[in-house]
Amino acid sequence: MPDAPHDRIFVAIDTTDLTQALALAESLRGRVGGVKLGKEFLTAHGPQGAQKVAACGMPLFLDTKFHDIPNTVAGALRAALPLKPRLINVHASGGAAMMRAAAEAAAEAGEERPLVLAVTVLTSLDEADLQAIGIPDPVQTQVLRLARLAQDNGLDGVVCSAHEVTALRAACGPDFKLLTPGIRPQWAATGDQKRIVTPAEAVRLGADYLVIGRPITGADDPAAAARRIGDEIRAARS
Ligand code: C5P
Image (cartoon, rainbow, N blue to C red; front, side):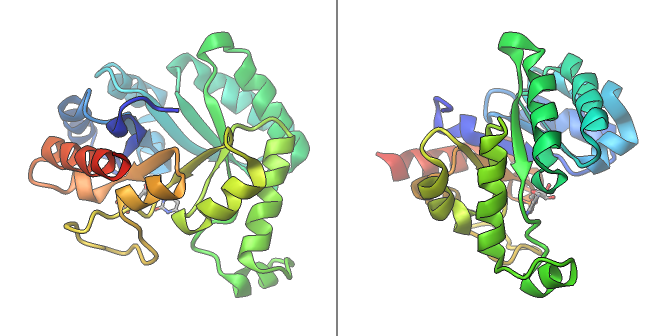
């Protein structure tokens, strides 16, 4: 469990602009738990770019969302270990053997092992989308099924909507890590996020980590925005 309220926050740096990414990481060091680099940044700048961001002293969440055969996912995860990510993820729908292979590859880093999280159902999918790919169940049923599969096969937690936190906590217990995007402080623009919750509410519901992008990265003063969010979480917990 992260120590300080702001340690729970991973800032989504969604840009292909390396200079901007480095400036953000530099300005947020010590004010958030780390930065999330996803496919956009990683495809543009690869591990060398991620290394440069990490060199700012920021723990990394590599939002790789691997989904392939077990041998390939294990190899990809192993290839990411020199970056010493704190968090990394794979798609739970890659199946039990794939998740076991990912967990085993991560374990090779010993004490510096990243937490491996599973993506269950992308929040861009609704029940009709699931039916179209042959899954007749409601979204929440599929989310819980994949979360249990992830837990049973050695993964540390899942990426989920804050609206799923309560059910997942009940199903998977207190130690299973829950990381939630879709977070908006009351004072921030909603943007394209629809089913949002505030940082304090997400933590109150039981989220371990929050992924927050534009409310921090788009603020005039990102460090001040991060501090304000940390203060709101602290106030909600005291
Ligand atoms: O700027 P914003 O706070 O909306 O950024 C949220 C981050 O979390 C983005 O990197 C986005 O891709 C990611 N994400 C999300 N919703 C999901 C899964 C990931 O917003 N369901």
